[in-house]
Each structure stands twice: as structure tokens, then as C-alpha cells.
Length: 302
Image (cartoon, rainbow, N blue to C red; front, side, top):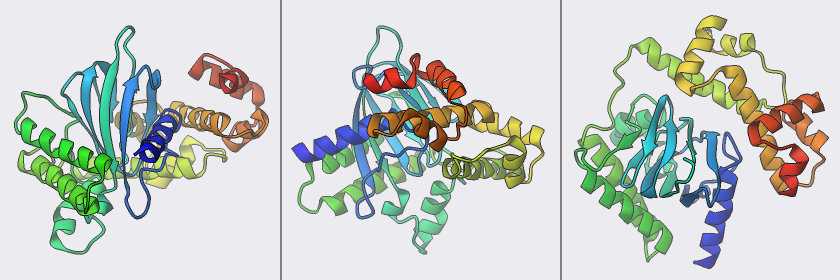
């Protein structure tokens, strides 16, 4: 159990620093991980980030400002927060307040999304590919809340305690949670046009492209062309889906990635700046200080 909690602590620490998370949520054999988070004791904020896996969080105590995709809200005790695959999300401290939460981050492939059977084709794969939508938060008074919470807590306990046959039981509890979300109408087709759905898919592809080309010069025209959109339409739909302009997202992504390297490696600051697409060290220092309120060297010392 000590080794397990150590792994969770390390992964949780990485969670604060990476935009497309570098933290591994489990491994190829068990693509699931749990996180016990305390804001601000664990960290001042969970920076804007995304990952391929789905995430379910239960707020145990306290409050914080939360963002999931385009939705912003005050996270409160008892809230069940749902984060779809590839969806940007963040959490930030409210001065003088603390938030304690427990999360499970899991690949839908673990539940069978990559299969060829009807359950994968009709439900799990559309969910993993963003063809279905869900609300950002389920409140205590919402329908089916008690059953969904109980199923999630069984999955969380199973992952942490790891009883005999826990791999099978964990899959069962997570799948049951997904089934309940379908049954209660929380997972459903989007109420938008085909073009809107296509746009969301295209933006997911752009986010992936940015994460894979962080060292390169990236332009709006290049990213818009990947989608087959005009620059003005691309900028509009990017902001709508991500919550910030594309340029701000790229800078934020690069700075968060640089912060992760400063924390985890002994590479010189100049090398880290270059690794993350900054050819001008002064501009890098300026952007870093805007993000963290300190220089890269001060950040590394802390």
C-alpha cells in the first residue's frame, strides 16, 4: 500500500504541471489511476490540462472554482465532476478555502471501447471519441445521484485496496458507473449540428497536434488548415471549445511543459526554453513570470 500511495503522490504532483498530462494514468495492463487532491495543500491550482482518459471526481469537502470544457462552476461538497476524454479542465483555489476530492482517471479501452462488439460500437467508442456528451457536474439533488456515487466509491475502494480479483471487479464497477450515467440520461448525443460535432473533433485533433509539435513554430494559419477551416472560424471555434484563444493556449501549454521539466530535470533553463518552442530567453522568462509569478530559476529553487 505504501508503494501504491507513493505512485499516486508522484502522479498527482505531475498533474499540476502538465497541459497534455505527462503523468501516466496507470499502465498498459491497468490504465487506471486514482488521485486524492487537496487544494491548496497539494497545489494552488490544477492548471488547464487534458488527457485521453475519462475522469470522474467526487468532491469530499470544501469549494473551488472549476472549469470543464466550456463550463465554469463552483465545485461543492458532494459534487460528482465528469470530464470526458480529450476535454480541457482546471481547478483553482478560492482564497481562504480548501477543496478535498478523490478522482479516478481511466481509459475507456479498459472497459472495452476498442472492441468490435455492439457495446463498444454503440456506447463506449462513441463516448471515447466525443460523439456523446455529458454534463460537467452532477449535484446531490440530481436524479440517480446516490446510485452513481455508490458505484464510483466501489470502484475507488477497489482500486485502492486491490482485493483478490480486483482487476475484474474494478472493470465491473467502472462499467456499472458508465451504465448508470447512460440510464439516467447523463450521457447522450449532443444537441448540436453535425458541423458543430465535427468542429469539436477537429479541435481535439489540433490539441493533439500541438502537444506533438511543441518545439515547432506554430501558426494560426497552419492549425486552421489542419481542420480545413478559415482562420477566423478556427479562432472562434477554438475559443468556444477550449475557453481561451489558440495563442494563449499554446503559450500556456509551453510554459506548463517547461515548468514540468524545471521540476523533474537538471537541464539548463535555455535548453528547456528551446525544447518548448521559445527561441528568445527573455520572452520565455516574461511568459513564465506571468504564469507563475516568478522566474524559471526561482521556480526551480522552490
